[in-house]
Image (cartoon, rainbow over all chains, first blue to last red; front, side, top):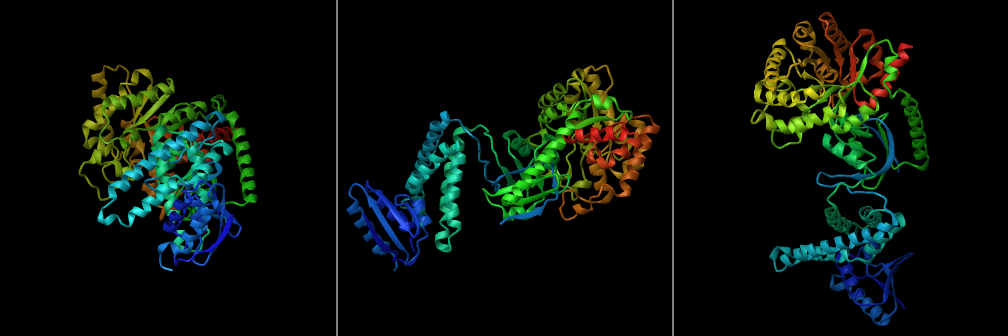
Length: 88
Length: 541
């Protein structure tokens, strides 16, 4: 499954939001990938997510595959859309 | 983009490898190939290090929780903790161990370099700064990995640092490092002298490189021409290989001069001796069948100790050298703490703080100022007298009285130890004043040893380690040759042998001059012995 999100918060996908994303992703058993343009990284890897350098307004695709893939996709999209509880 | 530059001095050789850049607190990261049967063990080491690093981070986090000032720090530490369990970090590092057949530290370095590279390409300054987190996590892991081993493991890199001590150079050489670059240092820097002695390729005085180079860059060192080339193109690397091959061929052709037989055929009668400081250096000296050790610098043991080494500690150090030389003559130069080594000199000087150390209490001046130091060293050396052919050399002499004062103590020690045979006592000619009164000095000395490095330095008033004036350090200045000639004349008039032991001894351009002067021996870094033996042979034909 896959869904598209746009980074909302001002500072982009920096350390704290990335960590939140990864912490949530790791709660699911399914494979989770995040794509920006032609780069696809492991959604459970903080280091890899950080290398995406996703600033405010960046379009990302979240790809989930396996057990509870739908719940995972929904939860992760909701987190990104909420702006990680930061200033938008 | 490639970048090239010039260093002040080099120790010979041409190499190409990746760089490990060391800040003062950094450790050298071991790099070596492993066999397939060790893959699992290396992966286990990785997991152990992750577990240890995670535990220590957990403890730090617990300790900080609830602390009012820890608010900003806690999220950072939690981020680091999350990175330690990062699946990509684990997968890539473990895959590199297998794919590249390398040790875990090296694999981890490759893995981290990949992440860091991605950050380097970012425009967003705020996100870019997260690179520091990855580097800190990497350091923490390396700390635990290297803590596990504790032993010295090999390294296949060029080590770049601000400065190296002589013992660090020996350690790099033992670890098999490809080469080294010291940002600081000028001609005749102590580390360079040792590097030439063991045959490790390196450059000193390369500040421009220091600011440009980063960990993992590819670097070519040409220590024959004292140049470096950072991030070479493929073409440039090919050119480097051609140069390496040419140098290799040249060294091969010198190999036929690796035996003493070539000296016996000559009519000049000049002995070739080695300058050494560490026992490790005599391997090369013996391989090239030198006629003996012309200059054993005894400072090292003193430099690395927090307290003055005892007579027995000194004896062990000297004895190892005597045994290694198997009866060939060894000239021990008594302790001379040069101005460039003063940082370590508190143990001798106590509160003495010379305004101008190069002109202060060094060499024989200090030995006579601290008679116990002199006597202890003489006892330690002379205890080896029965097992080898040893002589003693007095440094920094300016007056005949200084040589006589040392001889008096030496005779006392000889009697205490019950030595029958007399030990020969020589005088260094390394100050212009000594050359000018060489006739007086020759009457109280059994031989002369001309220390060209200090002689040039004092004659021209140039600190050879100071990169701002090192361009003035010119051994070809006519004043230098004039003083050497005076010393040689005085020695020959008084019928005592004369050795040349500074860098001039290893200079092909001076060989003919020394043959004409009829000096008795040339003493040099072992790495120069073959070149000079060939030069002598060429000249006699």
